[in-house]
Each structure stands twice: as C-alpha cells, then as structure tokens.
Image (cartoon, each protein chain N blue to C red):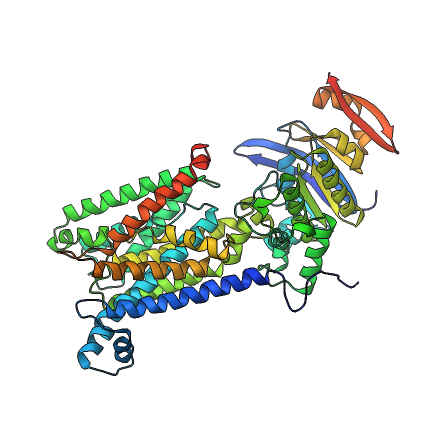
Length: 351
Length: 259
C-alpha cells in the first residue's frame, strides 16, 4: 500500500520549528564565544578582543599571553563548563519531574556538595587540590537529590519539591557552617565565603582538570537520555508503558546532576539560580519540548555565568564581588516572578 | 470466540498489603473489543495497569503464547499500548510529536527522525482519529475532545496487538464519546484486542463484543454484553435496575433506578 501524506518532500514536517531551533543554537554559540573573548579581555588589565585572540594563538606580548592563557583562560573555561552543566542540569530536572521550578539549587544540591567538600577538608582527608574533593562533593550532591526525591515521592507537585528542597539546602548549609566552626584547621573556617558564595576568581588549569572530567561525564549522561524526558511529559505511567524504566532513569539523572553540580561546586563553590533560569530563557525561543531544551539551556547557562563573571569585574567595589552573589541577586527575583506566574498551581494543592 | 490471544490465570495484585485483584482469569481473542465495567474501586484500572506492566502482579499472563514475565520492558511496550486515565500532557508539544511518541517502543525515540514505517503508523493513527487537521498545533491549545483524540492516536500509533484504554470517554461530550468508541471499535475490527474501562454501560453494551464485570477485585461476570450485564448482575454489582431495549440490532442498557 502506498502511504499518502500531505508533506512536501523538500519541506519536511516541523521544518520551521527545526530551523528556529538551529538558529537559536547558532546564535547562542556565537554569544558564548563573544562573551568568552570579553571575559578574557576584562580585568585589571583591559585587553582588546584582537589582543586576546593574538595572545590565545601565542602571538603578541609575553605579558598579554600570560594574562590571557594562564590567568583568564581557566576562569573563562570554568565559567563555560560550570554554567553549561548548571543550565543542562536544570533543564534535565525540569524534564524529568515535569516541573518548571525544578533546579539543582532549589533542591539543595550545591549546598550539599559544599558540605561534602568541606567535610573532607575539615576531617583532613584531602587538601583542596585533590580529586577526593570533587568526589566527596559529588557523593553528597547525589545523596541530597536522591533523598529529596525519595521524600517528595513519585509525581510530587511543585510545592512539595520546593519545600523539601528548602529543607535540604537549609540542613546542608547549617551542617557546612557547623563543620567549619568545629574544624581545627583555621584555613577552613576562613573559607566559609568561598563555599557559600561561589566565585571564579584565581582559578587555575588545575581546577579545570579537577572538575571538567566529571562535568563532561555528567553532561553526557543527562544529554543522552533527552528523548526519555519527552516521553515523560505524558506522565510516568505512560513513559513506563512506552518501555522506559522510569525508576532507573531517575537514578541516572540524579547521578548526572550530582556529577556535574558536585564537581562544579568543588572548584567554584555554590553558584545559584543558573539552572533554574536558563531553561526558562530558552523555552520561548525553542519551544517546551524537554528533549530539545538541553543544548540551548546549556548554552544559556554558559552565557549567563560568563556574563555574571564579567559583570563582577566591571562593577566598581572596594572588595571583590562574588559571582554567586550576583547570580542570586538576579535569580531570586526571577524565582519569585515564576512563583507569581505559577501561583494558582502552587496554592491549588498541586503537591 | 476464536482461540484466545491474551490469557491470564490466577491473577492477583496486592498494593500496600491490600488485595486489589484476586483470582482473575482471562481468555480473550484478538480482533475483539472488551469493555471492563464495575463500580468504583472494583480494580478495573489495576487490572489494566497490571496488563501494561505498571504494577507487580502474581499469576501468569501469556500473550500470543509468550509468557509476559519473560519479556523485556520494551518488548512488552510493543505488545500493549496503554492509554491512562485523564489528561497528562505537561509540556506544550505539537500534537504530531505526541502521536509519534507511540513509536518509542519501536526504537524511534525522536519524533523528528521517523522511519517510513513510523511515518505510516503515525499518519494512519492521525487519520483514524481525525486529528490530522490540527497535527501541528500545540497540545495545550486544543480542546478536551481534541486532546483525547490525540491521546488515542498516540496509542494507535504503537500498532500493538493489545490496546488498553482507561476510561477514554470520561469527561467527553456525547459526540466525542461516540467518536472515541467508534475509533476503538475500528481498531478491534482491524485485528487489535481492545480492552476499555468504562463506567458507561450504554456505551459498553453498544460497542463491545464482550463485557468483563469486576467487583471487589474479582471477575464476577463475563460474556456478550446482554449475557454479562443481566438484571441480577446489575442489581448486585451496581445496585441499579436497568431499562433494556434493542436498537439496530445492538442491545441498549440504560441504568434506570436504584435497586
């Protein structure tokens, strides 16, 4: 039997939506590259984009090369990697839970990761430059997200997840401060600000090497199951009936988020709200399909963190502004705005 | 009845310590529309979910001679298409992409990368439920009746030998109820074993080849609609008396008064 469809062979179905997505990804990629160049140029010594490119290629003055390649490049790479994994984690969690308010920071994952990292330092199990640090942060992040989803239960509504997330992050934050207070190592106690408020300052390639492998693996795990999030948009039972092992998918996503967020926190401290904001910025541009939101959200996350990290260097201040402070200053009002928009669903006992 | 295609023996489901289904035996042929009726809490949805593999079940189920327990999740998904109760589209996807999710069990996870066979299945399913006209519109912009037809197209696109539908006519207007039952009837006539849970005894007797009556987790009657939904069954199970007639050769059963 011949199949009759009304589609034109030269204009496949969904062509407009597909080209719109491709255009968005291209534009976001260009934006991230431009922001990276800006990030390499901004600082105590202002460098023009052309000087930056020369320095990257090993041309131009030696001082410029050192500034760009050794001081600012790791910082920019970390901004891209951490921002991207936060955006990707937010999009994956929102897809998994079918919940536009899901994100690693609202679930307390960064706070728990910080606790894990602080604990191993305080116990003297690791110094700040060993792989034990990201591993501890990853394990703590995994436990926190796993516990949160276990407490909230299957098909948990927004309200329940947010309340449980608030409890987890408060607990992790308090535990972190307590460990610092009890630590015999004075160095640890001085670093409270580092863990509570993330920053990208003075990061080296050692930090990049510490975090990047885990971020890449976690990102690949989250991105690899992107089509399952789409099936989940019809509910967990339907997804299961389509052949998806939903229980295993949950564990997989939790592990991916923990790897990415844990490793990020281990080198930058806790940087909030990028995971929440990035997917929301991209939905008007690429649509709501959770399977198609991951790459744009990762790019948006990278762009947001790069921009915030440039901004903290441009804002005149007597001491350094932490980039985590800035993302929270932007992110919290945005979160409140989302709550206003979702107010009916939240107060309607969606939990 | 031809040779049974779906068989179940000694089926039992316990949920949090409580027996929801017990001693259910089924022998259902292909090319057959089965209506499952029973009062609220009788275990209808649970039986459907047990067949779809969504709740742990004791007893043996075979489909086409194969033991269900021996099948992988995906193999099972290719054999049972499941339409849950209610409206569960959380994100605003185009209707066509939702229908294409029916091809997920066949390994086509991306609605934009359909094989020729997928495209044919999706096109046929959308034509069968008359949703082609709004295929590119977001699901959230459709009316309840239109959404129910898209949901039905999604399960038809699986092209599974067994289609399980949990109250697909609930909360639909009269015309959409008839449309949905007609689409299910057509699927059965095309060779599918369709099992549909409904509270509407009129629709059940009008469209179904046979009726399963569940009460308190047990199968209390089954057979052709007029044979299963006897006065005794209706008064005992549903506590109603019914008005009975025949129209165009089909039985008409309308609950009339409390028994």
